[in-house]
Image 1 (cartoon, rainbow, N blue to C red):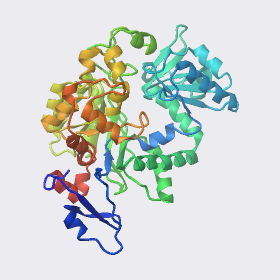
Image 2 (image 1 turned 135 degrees about the vertical axis):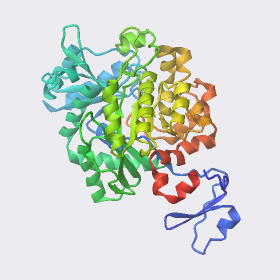
Image 3 (image 1 turned 180 degrees about the vertical axis):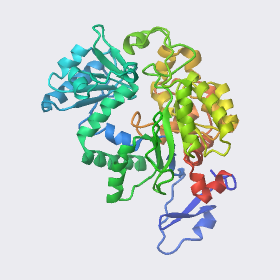
Length: 489
């Protein structure tokens, strides 16, 4: 990771601090009578990893009892997922809000969209929400719609996010409408549960080898969960917080508040949605297949849509940049990326000393020409590698076709241009696992063994930078830590 010393064979650690890295003879010379010596016998010692785009708190709120985990990774069929929900409903108290997470049209065998009547039959006495594996949409039964007040919130900003069944009844909820129902569930579970699960999730990151994670798009009201845990113990990883940006609403957080273990540095907002709900704005339409039409419930020739108009997105971006915040923008589709690049170019002319690096998040359907333009603007991209590892096959075969499915996540192009990119796991969608990021970066192989875009592969050294010093650059840590700044140049 250090151009001045690209190879090393030994490391000395004293009182929890690395004090020397270099040749074995030089490092072993520091050994004392009480020194512990660990011989790795040819294995590689890797640096601590940095997750530039993570959600440890959101993961804590989402998973753990009483959430029903119906992900296809261990509940492979749709009928098995329904059976798991029925078993949990049978144990529930009347009126208890039940949340099932992990519905997956791409991987659940026999998957179809549950009807409102079926959801009411599944849980006749309980509010029930069945949420997609990517958290961008959910199905609610009648009691859940009533409990969340969504029957009274059919305002224009929500109406566009609510899909009605053949009888005109609200039933399927996307993006903000779905998140509104989810947040009510979190509130009902209480603070103690949130803090308990947060302790477990930051430990998951540390166990996976991460020393640092971002908390992207944190709702300000959730900060109290971190505060409560930090009063009890020292966090095992560093956290860099990006507050969720809302249109024409002032920020609650104070820029730079906190310390080295926990600091607020940026604003993050969603410019479009998810490729798996059809809300990522793309130039080339989705294929018209059984997956897209019947399982995902998309209209024919779907091209998705952006969350905001161009002027609304400009207001969001200008508010953050003009106030000195670092800005990260969720951009899945290439249409959204075009608009976002246009706005960055305009705003960076207006604010040439803005507080970067400014970030594009996920970049799933990004085109090579967009990568080049982003790099020229000084932007950086954070790529969601496990998305392609787990779901690359259905994206290629049933959603976008080989031509566009091969081109997803163009991190090889970005690396060759010299962009300082990062890779992330985007929990709670996938668990924090840097080795999955490294595996896909260097092989471009999905879990089935299919190679997606062989030309986008990178070497192990380049991949490691995206999980260490370059990811730290995304989080502005090379400014905070002089040693990192020296290594990063």
